[in-house]
Picture (spheres, rainbow, N blue to C red):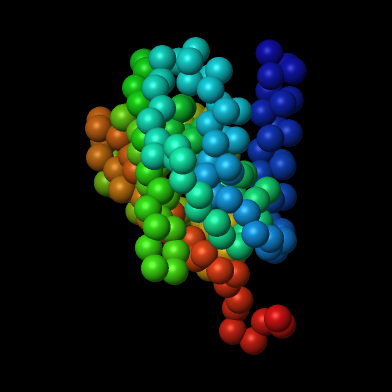
Length: 181
């Protein structure tokens, strides 16, 4: 019990530090499908243990973009972990990547408990959590990562039916106005 709580506290401190310091992406050419596959491979045992099936449209496709693969991995991992935690009695996760002219759209849906309308507006706020043991920093960290790449995050949810997180990311490196090249 003490070790478990110590680990939980360590995770909260790490998340807080990740949130507090600005995340500067280290851009390189990477493959979005590989980042997502690594997340899914890492979480496969947890999905199996919890009776969660995963469907995706990544087979035989290549989604090249300029981004920070480590930051993107962390961001997507957070979304997948939230999805798994929302399904206590099994369910499914669906991952769909769509290519648009100059960007990709990644939709990660789950059949979990969903988020109530009153909480959906607060989900981006630091330290707000719908979980008893959550730090409330996961979604704000994901938002920082996505926006640091010039992308956007949108969350759609219906209580009792599940949640879909839609992330859009530009294919090419995004620069803030006035930022050095």
